Image (tube, rainbow, N blue to C red; front, side, top):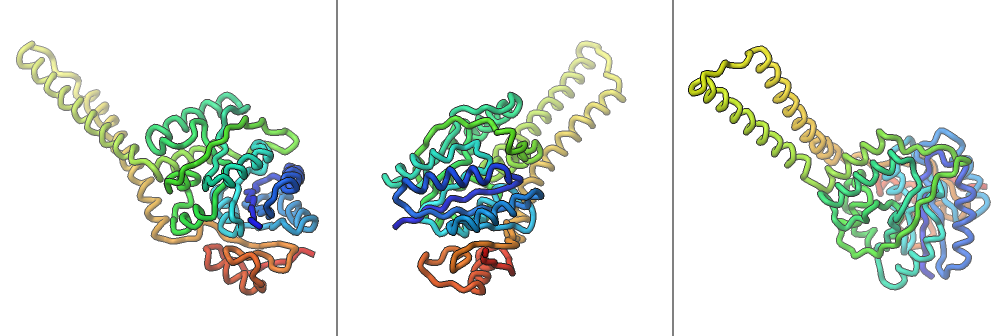
Length: 347
């Protein structure tokens, strides 16, 4: 029987996790596939991991994975997807803004032959500033990087095992969902309304600094536009400078004009040219930093603890019916990137 893995990155989501698992459990009861639920704690400082451990005790299909620190949502999702055993893997947020019931339609698309199913936001109830920023970002991203990205963005998706195998050799932890579209598998797209965050479940941890980092990572990973824009800006300013110099010479020689004040001209030239140079250096630096990260080959995440109530705590990419002792599991986790010395069995 096919296995479906549900991967949930968790960061300060202790309030919403029980309700999310209740809805996922109800979904699994009406689907023909087997299910497993992989919860990845991305360095939460609240009681999220304690809640995850309680969910493990209640349901043998739940795996609780604790990362050593906060590596980011993409890294947490990658950790869960890397260790998922499913023939299909669904990545969903933990805050219940993405409707779990949509998984039913995603599975129908997967059974019909699609290897990638995207749940795209058709509308959203977020603060106007957040919505405006999101709309502008996705419009630019579609225009300059990946034209096949859904118009209003997408984080909620289903991936077939064939797609996951194709992504194993990539080493771009900051690229996110863009790597899935980069592979070229034709996606099925489902549209949904993104819910407003329930205040009972706390505030969003998606800060503006994280959004800016995500914006830069996305553009640098899939577009050369920033470097080319810097080059065009340099050429444009150089052209303006030459034309301005010619205008001054022509005015002095043929129109009897006065030369501009030297002090003001020099200051303006220094500020403009210096600012453009720093901008270009910064853009090149963003690309070089990512080259440096790739050459270092640091793991995108480090697993501190894995808790499960079954006979084999977690089997990674091994066959589902394999008998794997905890020591072998720890060795497997080290091979796929994370490092861990503790693999626990929940009581």
